[in-house]
Image: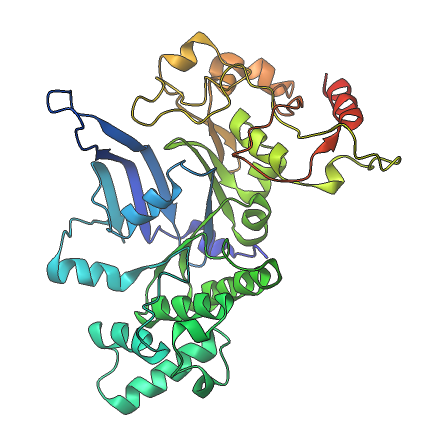
Length: 391
């Protein structure tokens, strides 16, 4: 699915974020206590190019949605720069913000709450057409709305145009939300887990729809997801976030097939993949089922974003943590082919280990945090076999 041309690969970014940082102040419970903030995003950078999809993956609470809302200017960055077509975005309201949002649209995660239940499909689609000056008469408005519904495969359009959201299925509501975003004729689409609340049977249809629209409209698309399989299928590039920090990124195939950061390896170990183990339990015995995981050296809980760990925020859970990991955030190490990682394991002083392929395949243990996945666990017999092989 991730088909792109050399032109789109080398194209200049449409939307670029450089060293974004966002903190949210907390309301004081005690009047004389020191002020506290939530460190939601720290030093996040990314670039969205026309005709290409970039997947942003990570577990809940890692800051993915916050990054999307910063790019959509629903939140104001605490620090950092957002550039649209190489021009710094400074819009805070009024006409300038409306003009920016004409080019950068967002599809929200929940199709049940993102549509107003008191308005029809026609009203939802006519508002952006009117606001951004694309429709100047009732007849033109009807024609454009019909075209939008046909582009998102809601046909015949006359059957849906006067319906209310409660009369639509979840997949149909999400298609209306996508059509509403397209009504502004944007060049950037921010999709915040657009299929996570849909039935499995229709997720692929929505992903195929977004992929087709990306190619037809030459959209730069940010695809936020928990599902690494969807990221690999849909996006040309994948970025991995943990606790507000970008830890790894590059071409999707490279990141998923040859992950380097221990956290990326943990996410991959949590994803069900029958081909990874070669054979299943021949006995069919359900006893002793355990879940696979990268062994952790400390707490398996997410760190507090009010008082986050110093340096790399994954170091309390990392089995390869070194003293320097808690002292400073590792610099970016380029691994070739656009693949990069922020990890001291792959710095200049560790080239020998990197060349020998160390730290590329985690051991497995039965201590997977439940926050990561609900996938079916593995038999203890297979876990021991994988451990012996990886050693």
